[in-house]
Length: 172
Image (tube, rainbow, N blue to C red; front, side, top):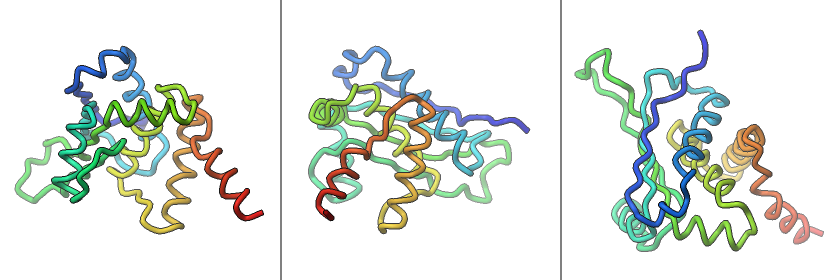
């Protein structure tokens, strides 16, 4: 059986994203690359990616995580389907929300192309939907290694390279 990516709907809900005409295509490529690499069943699965602004993501962050501040990306894994759902109903993976201003600021501050940072955030959000996390050091390392491999396939440089160099400098 060949790989089937999840059906992904990208919803642009903030006008600020109009400055990034390729944002939807970047997100779709990143999700497909991530889905192809992870060991998760994505055929007949669906997810939504909401491209929002800082205000929208701040509201979500406050309501769902109790943190009254914007963040770059939030993931909301779907609940497991119930026995009452029809067999042919699509399997929802969940939703991802990405904040434009925070994403833009981080990309600029780190000297990264916006589309590279957006790809990273889409991959990161998707990995959360399929069960990856970074609550412990070992989980974080596994997730970051997978992100690096996925992003490399997209031609995106290692997003953690500067962080790794800084960590190494602190050790030395």
